[in-house]
Image 1 (cartoon, one colour):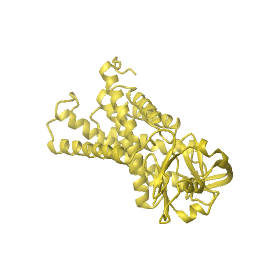
Image 2 (spheres, helix red, strand yellow):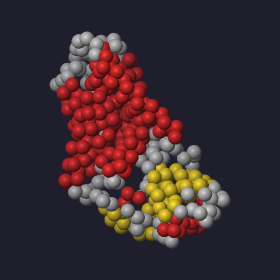
Image 3 (tube, one colour):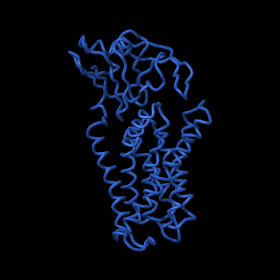
Image 4 (cartoon, helix red, strand yellow):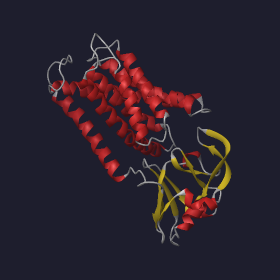
Length: 338
């Protein structure tokens, strides 16, 4: 927390708190963008690492504004806590991931000046790539090493661009306008400033739209069941205790496999039937709080009693032995029949 005889001031701490809060609440939006990118590429996960640098951007920005050792670590820790409290599907582990990112930022920027773009780009790249390997240690056992290396390189590239280059450009823009001083920036670069502020504006505007139109906390306990139904209702497991069943299921994904285990939950078809669906319904859509959605044919849902909704630490989760791993959506807040 100390460098060159200077401790973190009240102003530094306020800066860290603000940027940690912004980074934490923006993480769900970044996750949503990553899901869209995965869907566009046609894979259940991994490709979204191209945007992972946006998570580290806030840590580097705080470190660049204060220019004090320890800022990255503290910002990473607080950002992770905010993500946890905001309902991250990764649970307490997101704090560890964010903390490691902050520690790496601090460690790599020790040897670089505040105006050194290369230092920021390297710190952004290695810090962002670290999340892949931390998650590998915590969750992704059994994933081929080649795949881990590929998405690790993708995360590194994202960190170089979106975390390192982007944060350094924004710092230079703030110095150009006089908001920050003593950054080693000579002269005002109008185009650089305009580009930096435009990127921030687009990102913030997108996040406002996301939290207003997509993100949902579920409106309280339970998940909403609606759409083309005669009896919409709020599903709570305690109201279906007589219908709880145990199924054995194995998660089979493109890159991840989880050995068969017993899961206890309520058959999805029972929940759908309780809403008295219209005869015109053709599909069931399960939507998570971050906007991730799984669409299943209604005939398949009604014909498979082993497809169940399980309550776990992330909230309601879909489990089924005949489902692809990418369809085991967690943190469900809404079931819509259409």
